[in-house]
Image (cartoon, helix red, strand yellow):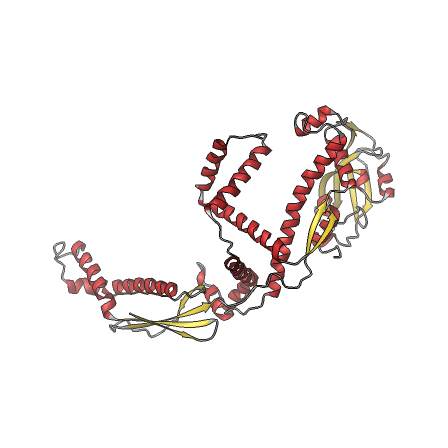
Length: 444
């Protein structure tokens, strides 16, 4: 067997595989001999069927099967030995008049080659790494929410200042019909808040959506509309009051603190706020990290320039699924998947250049910490090492879980690398400002 390669250009190649009779003859003969031993054909004893009859009935199918096995095995070995970094899979070049009646064959396969490129993590950029702080307003609001949550609920007939109302926001033209509960002081305009004072269960209040809340994004929750629809939304909605609820705030005492955090963990309002701040900023840090990871990913896709064997990939997409696609469908699929493929290549290059391989110890340590955090959420603050490792062993015996955890470990490694290498500007913001930044509404 002879395998040669012709590099059409830097991203495309054609591999030619020449198969001679000596490569497959012995294997074909062995398979046919096995067929002969077991063949049951009327008029012949089992094992006594003439080989010429076996050859006539099964010869062509066996030949095709054995040659195909040879092709797959030797082509795969060739790609490994030559260390060819290919995209997709080799595509056989179709020959309409291919002749299987000769003894020697020549097959051609198209290859799409991965491009060579460099990733500059230290490149100049306008990226921002956000540090989200829990400010005094957030802490005070959270304390008030805790008092409200653990206080007493009192059903009423008439709305007064500080009450909550349950009901339905509606606008027939826009298809809005959403049941919700909100505090009347959630409305941004004092005039709107006053419009509810004195109203009773069953009353209907008509409101303008423009400026209804201090942040238009709240319309997404209260009216159940999409993000793209909330900006500048200026319509009339009705709110039909179903229920009026007053809250008698819980007292900020040791009984409440113990209920929230366990005995004597928090002993004063100042310590309560400090605990809220600590817990909130841990969660905020995760959200800020995810945004930074996403922003760096988008930056690298946009600024790491390289060509792809586009025509080869479109042709490959046409044939790779269960059902072949048309050229137009493959073109559309390629357009949707191109950025994902580009980042796969970029990520692979970063992993290789920076030695970001995942070891078994990495995966085990990450899983152990994850299990401990989950157990703590269910009140198991000091589990034994034996209990934890037992759960870790069960988790790591599941291949799907190992794959999912491996992705999380690699994301963590990539994030740490980006924090170290990418020269981004650090900006301290409160949570509301961060949300605006998430939607591109906060100036850097």
